View (spheres, rainbow, N blue to C red):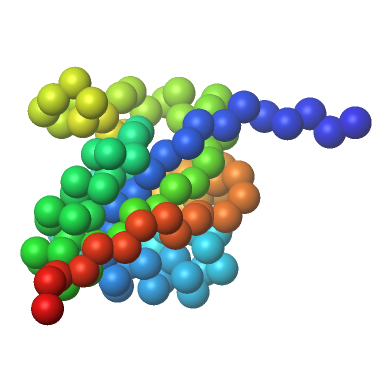
Length: 120
């Protein structure tokens, strides 16, 4: 009998380049951070991810995407929830050097759920 571990749903707003790298991983892993990105920021709710993808990624990258994925809850306990402003603007701060280990605790595939583009 297989015991399924509890998971937590996380959301990630992303631009086209990062999304392509996730696609290349088979929808299984987040790519390494760039030198100017010392922290990986998944968020805890869909609305916050949509706001970032729509209002920031579109402005800076021409398109914004929202992904959803599950991570083992027990593993996530090491990352305290950070409030980035309002009470629903919640995220985790995963140090770049821990991203490979974080990826190893993703359960299933990273799902593509929303796309936003600049108006023509």
